Length: 277
Image (cartoon, rainbow, N blue to C red; front, side, top):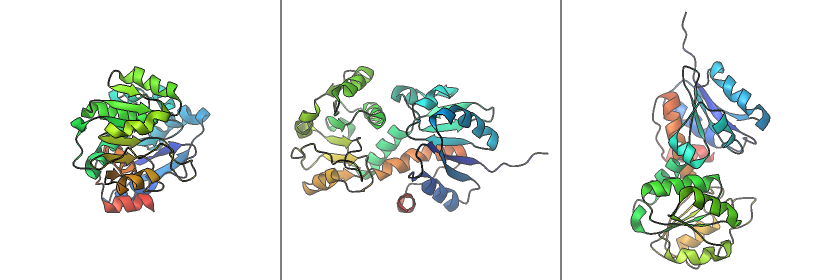
């Protein structure tokens, strides 16, 4: 006797209660009329491997992975995509019917899609990109920008050694400047990206001097609480094209949802509203 299992997916992190993903995926499932559920799962580091290996047996077709588990899942997966290998982290797991676990990273894809939709005039070859921060998000952003054909990436981080590590991994196109010099780097930038949590609700402000910003530049912030950070407000005032960080969350979710539930969801105003609810 065969029976159709209701496909399950979810997001694994710790903490995970703040995640917007359940609202977003829930909206897509409902608006597309699909059977399926997407739930938040708070999983401790020590339990991670056991939980992930058990999920497929419970009817899970896949899962998103968020902090602090994005690196750790790489050791658990059976197959890892090239882009997850390059970034050194995975945010999307696909469970195959034969029980194998595939790990992918869609953060870079989400970043570029958000940038292209939010700033349709942006061209990769327009000039250097300044990237602030050198964490996991920065790795995904640098991989995506290099892939898109950005000629030079100027990277700055509060602790320089982390930025140097990224330069070692990504090569000649990445130049590192000291955090105190980050403001000066903005003068020649075609694109400015904040990948740090600075400027986020409950975090310190981004203290980089912003007087180098000028009309014609594209400025994007991965922080989306608040939607308009101090960086984006300052950029808007001088006539830059600005792109908020919520779209990256929305677009990075598209490939996973499509692979789990078999339908490609649309990022529109309703999806944005669902994520913000």
